[in-house]
Image (cartoon, rainbow, N blue to C red; front, top):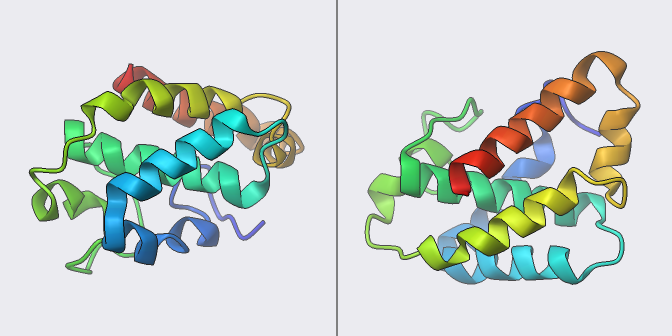
Length: 138
């Protein structure tokens, strides 16, 4: 895992979805959530797609800021300006799907969960980060 911290954008994989988000964010968010909800076991990349999608929605809806490596960028790679780039993007109806998918991320049937569970000192911090996101989108 290329992670250096427990926040959503503290992992290289979080930046792998910029193209999909810039092409059609709503379709990417929807498919990420539905794929996770329908999966028996959530793979690493699928779990990241969920957390990244939910974080972008959180920025759009709540203007929540995230520590990230693209803070100097003026495009979709910088989650913190997503609400400015796409102020008219409607995602309220995706909140229940996001919450359901995020709950799957913090369950034992998720590869990302299993990896974080191995880190005794960071597991609870990572899980709380996801729980806080769930709370903001609920």
